[in-house]
Image (cartoon, rainbow, N blue to C red; front, side, top):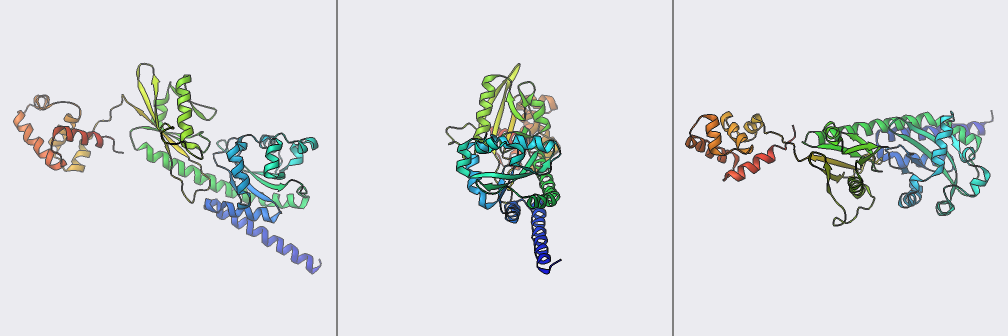
Amino acid sequence: MPKLKQEMMDREESREQEVINAFLEAGEHTKLWPGALQKLADLVNAEGWVFGGPTSYFAPICSPSMDRVLEYEMREGWVDKKAQVERCLLVFAQGREIVTESMIFSPSELDRPPDGSEFVNCVKCRRFAAMIVVAEKQSTVIFELQRLAGSQPFSGPEIETLRRLRPHVQEAGKLASRAVRIHIRGLLDAYSAFDFGVILLDWRGRVLLVGPKAEDLMNPTLSVRAGFLRGSVGESDASLKKLIRSVIDQEPAPAAESPCVISIARPGASPLLVHAARLPPMAADRLKHARAALMIFDRDSHRPLQVSDLRQLFGLTSSEADIAVELASGHDIGEIARMRRTSPGTLRAQLRSIFVKTETCRQAELVGLLLRCSAMPR
């Protein structure tokens, strides 16, 4: 083999290894995904991004060179309209590892794409090669390499390069997906320590995870249909959609125009209160998997105070903690004295000790403090 040809092959293998290393690092550190995408795009003379697909809980990520294109797609809603994604999935299902535009579009469709000429004219991309990065029940993530309209199709050697790199890209996707699941499960566990139901939503507003208490509260007024939370009647469903939209939109509406809490009517019970909160973004989280949380409160539920908590928090004796619990339950001094078979004077002396230890001055102030303590996570 001529020396020059061997040097070129060695150089190509070295570049491929750099791409492999970049993706494996990105699998563990999501902030590195854009750089890894750019390395792969440069290797085959293309632009590049990860596109989530119709079931993905990953938000789209792109190489830096495609920032403008992705911004346009997100703003105009093309992320959810691209015909090529659905067609790619059909070809992948037939066993193809790499899919190009010629496999899913006829020559006439390439000239007049079903995605619409407005999109093509703006982003100037027509040639592409795609592979599956993550294929799970919960999420299908597609990686696309794009070329500008007028460019040559991806060649046989370039497609073979992508085929060789595909297992490494998929390994990075698995690592990232595992990190997502660990993170959202940790969020759910943290929220579940409080006395309300919680539902985590992805960047599209679809349900990622439902906590056990939320499952109990949802039936029969709320349900998950096609991945989205829905109300059982039209009015509650419309209010719920507006609430969710207010916390997942790229640019949230002004506070005066967007609800943060709504009530959902229930037959034979008081309404459920549903509060929405946008989760703070993390600088290192480029996958943007959990965008918001819905917290569901049951106005009829009552979480009793624990005597052991009051003893630990305020240094109350067992007797003082029992009295505090009865006060928080709505009983007055006379009722508590009769239940405990003691005199009101003795009870008032104990109450003064409780005031000192809890740093309160009046019975109403004490009860308010105790009720706030009842919401503590356990």
